[in-house]
Length: 50
Image (cartoon, rainbow, N blue to C red; front, side, top):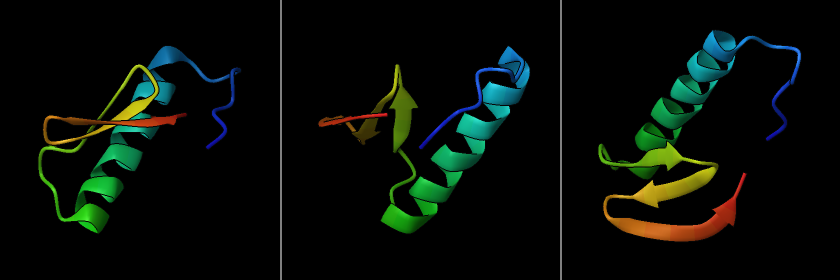
């Protein structure tokens, strides 16, 4: 995923929140989160960096 660096912090946060929600639905995991460019499935951290 490429995030436009000209966006404001609020715009980036909203974009990440939308991506996070889509990933939660796709993975069927309500605990999935994106933190510091990394994806967490519940309490399991993936090595994938964004």
